[in-house]
Amino acid sequence: MAPRFCVPATRRILAADGGAAVRAVVTGATGLIGRELTRQLLVRGDDVIPVSRNGGSLPAGPRVQAVDLERASMPRELLAGVDTLYHLAGVAHQQAREARYQRLNVDATVTLAREALSAGVRTFVFVSSVKAMGPARDERPRDESDLSHCVDAYGASKRAAEAALCELLDGGPMRLVIIRPALVYGGPLRGNLRWMRLAARLGLPRPPERGGRSMIGLADLVDLLCRLPREPWSDDAASSPLIVTDGECYSSQRIHDSMRIAGGRSPRRGRGSLVFWWLAALGLDVLLRQRPGTHFRKLFGWERYTSRRLLALGDWRPRETLESTVGGETGAPR
Ligand SMILES: NC(=O)c1ccc[n+]([C@@H]2O[C@H](COP(=O)([O-])OP(=O)(O)OC[C@H]3O[C@@H](n4cnc5c(N)ncnc54)[C@H](OP(=O)(O)O)[C@@H]3O)[C@@H](O)[C@H]2O)c1
Image (tube, rainbow, N blue to C red; front, side):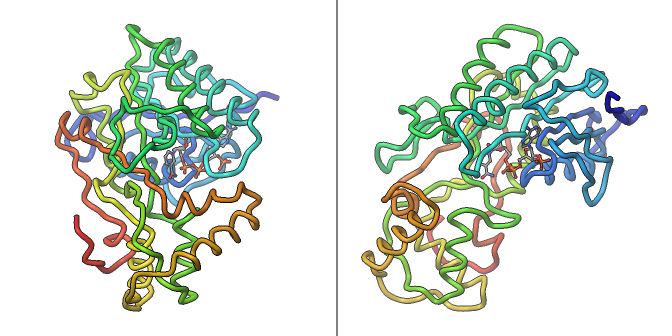
C-alpha cells in the first residue's frame, strides 16, 4: 500500500517575526543541520514539512515524513503549495561507496529539482559544500570561483549536482540558491573536532601552530537559511553558489586550546610537537583505513574560504565562533 502523508492543511499568514509565513519542505530534517533548520523555521511560524530517509519524530513539530530519495520520488502532495524546498539530504561524512554519492547527492537531487519545478515550488535551496570546490592549493582564502579538480567522491558529487541544477533551472521559474557551507560546528561534534576534543581530554600535547581552516557555526548557518525565502537579495544570489564561513581561521592548535578551555583547563603552553602529531595522525589513518597522510593534511593543511560575496549581498552576519559555542575564549585573533 502506498504510504500516506499527513500535510498541514492550514497556512499562517504572518510569521512570528512579522514577515509572511512560508511553507517549506526540509529534506535531511533529522540530520545535524536539518533538525536545527526545521526547529528555527517552526519558531518563526512557518509551515514546515520535514522529510528524511527513515522518518520519525523531532523534539517538537510535525512528524518527519519518510521518503528514501535514492529509491522513491517525493510524493506530489508534499510539494503542493510549497514556497521553499531546502534540500539537505545527502551523504557527507561517512566513507560511503562512490555509487551512493552519485545516487543520492547527484541523481536524487536532480530528480527532486525536476519534481519541485513541476509542482510550482518557488525556491530550491541546495545545501552543497565548500568541498565542491576541490582541494586548496595554498593558504589564501578562496572565493566561489577558485575551483580545483575534486579528488574525493563527496566533493565531486556536490560539484556535479551544482552544475546539473544550474543547467536544469537556468532562466526558469524556480529560483535556485546554492549554499556552500564550510565545516559546521555546534551540536554534537564530529570528525576532526571530536578527535581534537578527545585529545584535549586525554591531555595530549598541544598541536603545533600550523595550517588553518574555515568553519561555520550551526546557528549562523541556519539563520542564513531561514532568511533566504524573505531576503530580496536572494534573487541576485540565484544560480551562483555562496560560501558560508564565520570569517575565522582555525588551526588545530586553536581548536585544541578551545577544547581544553571548554573542559575547564587552561591551554597548554609551548609550540607543540610536530612529530607526536604526525604519528597520531598516521595512527588515525590506519584506524580509519585511510591513505597515509590524510589526517595530517586535515589537521595541519590549509582550507580557507571567504564569504565576501554573501556579506556584500545583505545584512546577514555570523555571530558565533567555535570558542563562543564550546565555551570560553582562547584570545585568538578574530
Ligand atoms: N555538517 C557539515 O559540516 C556540512 C558541511 C557542509 C555541507 N554539508 C551538507 O549539508 C547537508 C546536511 O548535512 P548534515 O551534516 O546535517 O547531514 P547528516 O547529519 O549526515 O544527515 C543526513 C540527512 O540526510 C538524510 N538522508 C540520508 N540518506 C537519505 C535518503 N536516501 N533519502 C532521504 N534522506 C536521506 C538522513 O535521513 P535519516 O536520518 O532518516 O537517515 C539525514 O536526515 C548535506 O548535504 C551535507 O553534504 C554539511
